[in-house]
Amino acid sequence: MTDPAPQIGIIGADAPRQILLAAGATPVRLFGAWSGDISREAAELLGAADAVAARVLDGVLSGMHDGLAGLVVCNDSAANLRVYYVLRLLAERGRIPYPVRLLDTPRGGGPHVNLFVARQYERLAGFVSACTGQVLDAESLAAAAGRENSLGEALERVRERRVSGALSGSAALRCYAAAAQLPPEEALAAIEAVQQADAPEPALRVFMTGSSHPDTTVYEALEQCGIGIVGEDHDAGDAAWIGQTVNAASPGEAFRALAELHAQRPPSASRSLTSERTEHLLAEVRRTGATGVVALVRDLDDGPVWDLPAQREALAARGTWLAGVVRVPADGAAAAAAELIASVQLSGEIAS
Image 1 (cartoon, rainbow, N blue to C red):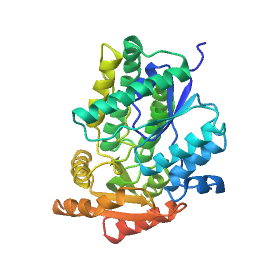
Image 2 (image 1 turned 135 degrees about the vertical axis):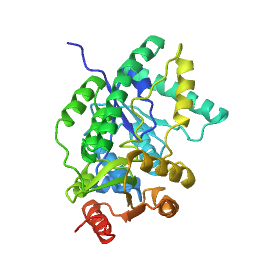
Image 3 (image 1 turned 45 degrees about the horizontal axis):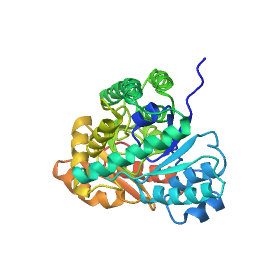
């Protein structure tokens, strides 16, 4: 039996999985949760920040992830950047039993940005190889592409089944979580198992925007009231960077191609212009056939709340409504979901 590949933890959504797989690692995304206690230590070290990021930090501090061979923190939100600075200091003091690396890959594209991102990927590959002992090369990149492409094809089927009504939004979210945290072969089996359950036909089909959802808490609350989520623009769901790869004759060529691919990703709430987010939202509403849009935004989550006025206006011009709840407190997911459901019911879109 082959020994399992070393696990590299990922905080954030900017790490190209092909690089980690090619360097002999299994990427494991640390999601946090909508609810749960936050230790005094994590709260004091992180300061005022998104509660989900604080729970991720708490998991690391508690030793929950001590089996990792290394940890990559993506600079894709202000909260994650703060988490990195805390973990770097703790790693230097021996509190964290594995090395920590920042991955800084700005959006936007263009020759200079893409060159910077490609160099970041080169350093990422070196970091992961140092953790695993496996050198990344053209052969391992090709093998990793094959494994990751299979995962991408499975997730495309998940998206198609959800839009067709054969799969619930919470089931789709569990599929994305499996893909983000398991070796591709195990993830494929988990995704297949999730899809075996029957999905009740929702009374209302909506699209989710706003903050990322680290678990299915909110999705399940909405589904219990007949509100089905047919798509989302956050990075734990449809905007996750999973299943996308490049073909390259050398590592350097792969890093450059992945940088160009990164520039084409859906716009993120914390790192993109509101106009870009609004345009993407309109396209996704058309793709999924959603009747309306719902949004939950956590307190101190940078970005999403700024998007909502322009998104609401653009949707209204197309005859589509948006119901949102903002500044959701640290343990406010259940109450926020109830408020969101009431808002949709009040609009007359679904019976109370």
